[in-house]
Length: 329
Image (tube, rainbow, N blue to C red; front, side, top):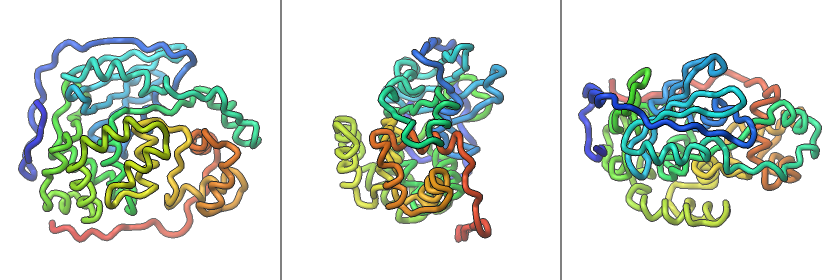
């Protein structure tokens, strides 16, 4: 049953439903896919209640993912097969939807055939080392948008902590034999009715929480419009029509929900520095990053993924940021 109400603060997590037999399927991609790298792009920090991986995957580990599908909550357990295939088991009301969407999650709709990595020698080398790199998509627009809004203008630590708290408090317990308690995010109405004290307790800043609540008021309309949009620019127009949503949040949503291979998160605190360092050996700004990525138009997100997968990233400089915490204890 979907959770649209409010759970009391510090309430014990609801008991998991009795475990029933899963629906099983196997996805055999045209080319080998690394599910650890592909699916982990949807992870929100080390303690994400919607994601867990038993390592190493190469030795039979399992990726667990919980989502709220259009048909209800689903738990997926994914196991890498020899040859690059994926064995999947699914539980919950949304199990069939999740299995139908599995190829897209694993990058089946990503089409790198016209990607010319030879335009930069380092990119060509990273592409040679990681031929199985694919950009997956969830097709779950609202959850992708909410998680991106949470990450606006705050540290990853703050954003991931807020996601973990709200999803655990107001989400729905995952079906199936998950290795630890896991939760699906609230539905649209659930996000809309999270009380103000809960956002504060979770450590999310008021601008982000207000944007999420206002976005939930238009949730169904935004999902329909973004899903019907024909390209990234059209989706940007849909998302940026929301007060409090800018180009960075739109790009992050496009990447997560639609697997956009060309989206670039302009305005990210570290991204331009890393792209500049990887491609030139020196830092650059957003304009410089866009200039460096221009030869790869259509695949700029792919180049960014290759940089993070295959290059020596720039060392972080200066003292680590310790965000102030003004919450009541």
